[in-house]
Amino acid sequence: MPRDLSPRLAAIVEALPLRPGLRVLEIGCGPGVAARAVARRIGEGHVLAIDRSAKAIAQAMAGSAAELASGRLSFRHVAIEELELEEGERPYDIAFAVRVGALDGRHPEAGHLARQRIRRALREGGRLYIDGGEPLREVSLFD
Image (cartoon, rainbow, N blue to C red; front, side):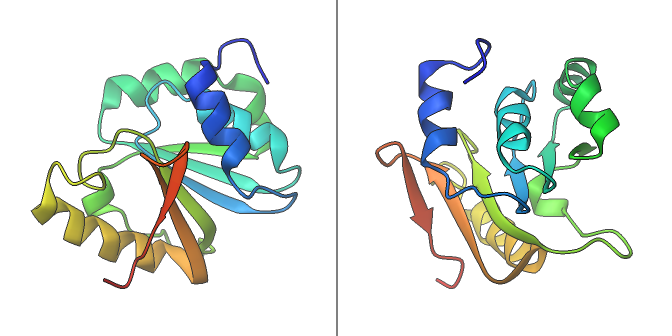
């Protein structure tokens, strides 16, 4: 694992069911550390990392030149409650979020909308993981 990854984030990335070729959505990417680690593990797959903070996205992009150039990683400044796939964008296989209030119960009203948006962004059978397990737990998108 890269040195910039905290032990907690390293455990989360390690716990994700990653394999080459996957399309992964990271919700609330912050400075992009986990997104870069995931991108390194999925070969020719793709990671879309989103955050509601423009500052976080700028920081993430500044630290991700190689991954951005490879086409395996992209960033988008958007809140999960407003996420829509772009024209021609293929759905994602899995999504994950660490410390995202709309998904960890801190903001239940935003959580309902967030889960709807995630369902639309994932392929049928796609899965959502959030922190709070050991180290992750899967969240049903159909509750």
